[in-house]
Image (tube, rainbow, N blue to C red; front, side):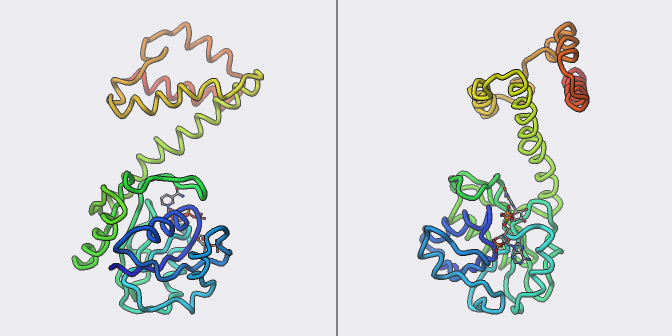
Length: 249
Ligand SMILES: NC(=O)c1ccc[n+]([C@@H]2O[C@H](COP(=O)([O-])OP(=O)(O)OC[C@H]3O[C@@H](n4cnc5c(N)ncnc54)[C@H](OP(=O)(O)O)[C@@H]3O)[C@@H](O)[C@H]2O)c1
């Protein structure tokens, strides 16, 4: 049985709390959050809103808090020589206070509070200085996911960089598409099957095989017409930049 304390009940913390609570072999001992946990009485029962009330009996302490708070919160914990990990894709293991044994437990997925996820499919990237700690984190990761593995801070920061392109930047492109549709009183929902198929296709094909469109076809007439259609300067420059990137390949 792995005994866990969760610090933070936001986008990541709320999902971890649920999966830990429902997984055999894990005991979720306590959750730190200043906010009441609505609609889950069992989780609300183990919540504390004081860092000083955190139990010293757990095997792992998971900080699911904003990146810029990891360092200060890890310093404030009244714990010593315990295994304390963060869940960040970009923060180094070193940001954690060295009064405890340090580690990382990074679930490689985008999380929003209230939007369900299937943890079994989510890669969990773990890191620790000590082999015994690494084994605990791998065991914990393997209990909730089929894809837990050891990843160094350097590798994690490269993964996080790549993830920003396929998650945050793609989402910004959705936003631009929505703006264009709205401007012409068209329904963004019309594009949703295309969004779905684009994401499905990449499960079977490489990005090079999956690419289509005017830049891939070297269709300059369509590219010029699109650029004329775009009035917004930043949309024009994003279109030009991405078109050049596709043409260069
Ligand atoms: N969101 C994602 O998709 C995602 C994916 C993978 C990894 N991560 C990483 O997971 C971590 C958490 O991200 P998140 O999106 O879950 O953040 P979040 O939704 O903003 O949740 C942050 C949690 O931290 C608590 N918190 C904030 N400031 C605090 C402070 N000064 N002292 C104590 N607790 C504090 C908040 O508590 P209250 O509710 O009490 O305010 C909240 O429970 C980050 O390191 C992030 O990089 C995020």
